[in-house]
Length: 455
Ligand SMILES: *Cc1c(COP(=O)(O)O)cnc(C)c1O
Image (cartoon, rainbow, N blue to C red; front, top):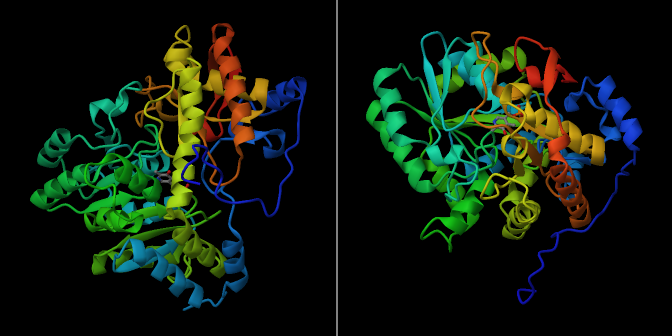
């Protein structure tokens, strides 16, 4: 097979889900009913759902077998011990605390480390991470390298932390923990190098501050390290993952991403005293420490998913198939964040709709058009998501992107070819798209529920 260029899906289909076709007129009605907020659409009115890669992956036959094996004992379930062993195989932290999702791990950790007057630096906070930091009264600051904010830069590790700015923040602010997000979801699915992690670690050591990973896409990050970082090409993926973990004191995790689960997450850490405080919080809102808001069967699915996601055939296909979409759009002249990230292709809506100012939400306008024309659901990552500041004012986000997130092992190449055709068509007609205004919005995380109207 190595003679041939085509990368095939390294699986065949075992059970299928129908996709319902809709007309443009029906989609116009669905948009009206949803206040032009794609989160509020019924999923069966969507043909190709690229809203998120979170929990939307297809499980393998072995994962479903694990679901059958799930042991639902309240305490000490063997499913927990299999889950814990699978996590520690890659992330050998002393304590592994299961949660129902990544944000529950964040909430528990920041309830212990956050608070008024503190600052949590990150290369880029994911939206729930930022909200959980700010909910405690702490400030969440993003310290991405400048290349990470330039959609056309070809820097191989655009997720890297700006070490000079991190040093400044550590000198001036009260920092309870430094976070590094691998890969950087909000900024294009871009990886972080081992060298950069070592730099962050050295600063954390100097200032005596713990380092945590937001490790949702650790396997995709490790694949990029293997491909792009000098001297890493011959290493096994699990080795690279363990090296990433070795620089950290703990991690928060969503099992809905690289662990190939439909639900789940965990908090893992070395500090015994902090772990005990976190377990107490866990019991308040999630559950007993050996299930933490999950069923035994979920723990089994995650344990098996962790084995499958570090498989090189899987990762090669995963990264190549995402690049297939991004490279085709780039070749068609559609502005996309370069180089193509791991889990998603990010369209640069600000560049594609230069006639729509950021406070008229070019990303939202583009995302709505992709649904109206092609029944494709995408996600605005821009001024709608990040424009509202904690003090109530609004300003443009650094970028106005539309994310086409690729669910794991779910769509085939013909689905992706269709997406390419739709996006290229909408891009050709981008001059006809107008901006949008927000009709109503909640005080926090407005992108999930706000209503929009065309201007
Ligand atoms: C999805 C995600 C989270 C939150 O995880 P949930 O399981 O959705 O709560 C946190 N950080 C990053 C980088 C993510 O992608």
